[in-house]
Image (cartoon, rainbow, N blue to C red; front, side, top):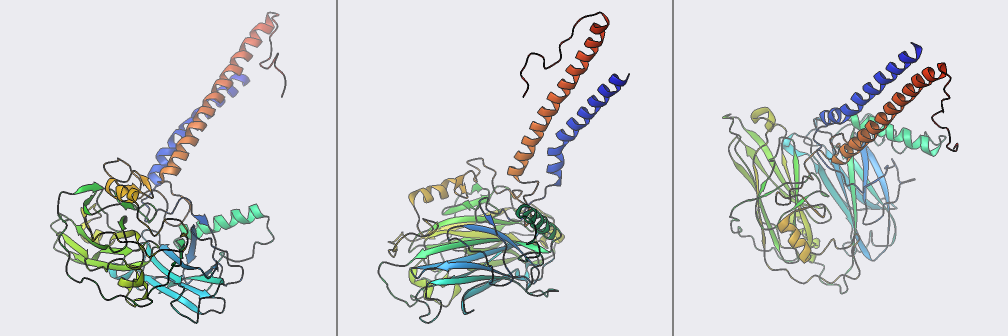
Length: 509
């Protein structure tokens, strides 16, 4: 009876484990929520420091992931030569459902070792009243100021949360502190990760994605003054049958689109931000319109600044945005007078012109405000993009060297083809034509560890579940075999029959 009790208990344990393992994927899927931003898969985790002392060095051409708490001021380090322009961007990502004020946002500053500011920019959430990814950029530009930020040496990137009052201004809690120096490396790393995840899960911290690009100087120095204002006439309407395209949820998963009419495959939901990218070469001019479809709810309410379309250049620098209110009927937001791409635009004081300084992929980020859900439901709502690229491609300015990462400031035939066929983060699969599903909005938790809804994580769970299930089945069969042999052994022993053990005849290991 003792042996039988052990046997049935073992079977029950195996069965329970099998049920638990089989339920993991379902539970994981149920726990997943759409992510507001898909962080780059190859992004390196770094921690900003509350002062320049000990600031981690960023390498050009790389993408980094960090986080920042309320009132936080974080420093990162750059080592720059005198033969390139440096651009750093920071995308701040609050968790979905977080309460934000219109004045809140993120500020990025590049400064030298003496604290002199090279440049800075602040990006705020604005009047939409909903948390969304916001991106600011700053630079060290050779030739813009003859007296500051021109020499080779150490520079610092300062990232700040603005528009809020923190209980400990300028501090970052456990980030950047040295309280765990006495711990071993693995213990310190584990505790730091647990602390980050705890802060981010509680909504205290925003996720950060940092981009760092180097632009080489020109072979021949040209004009250092801004060109005259270009064509200010309204562009010709972009018409035709719409092609279906699924937008991405970040810069790295942005879906490529060319000139034409594009209909968002899954529509857009209240509080969601979708990313698209357009190839724009030297001398070309970009136009774009985002159309939001009717709700069909019959509600006669109104939400001001419900739809926001923002334009960013190839280094994620802000160029311009357009907004539209929503009353349940179709509405549109237009970017219709963006200057043509010219190298000398960088010397202009106007952001719209200054931002159009490179050829390359330009990004359209379309956001539907969360307050829309209160009046018209969460959606999805129909979304159509009308994209126009006017003018023929011109010769580039002639760079002395290559950018980091390479190819940022050029458009190739392959890029044009990708825009026609659709791609996400450089890989085909975004468009309806290719049948991909990247950028669906469940790829990663906003500012914590990978979310349950992440396809990559889901595959890991499936793999673990599969491996666990297989292992448990083998274990169950093993228990069954041992029990059977024991029963046989008992009967045989009573009849004087010799019984070999399960490992008899095999070498011990």
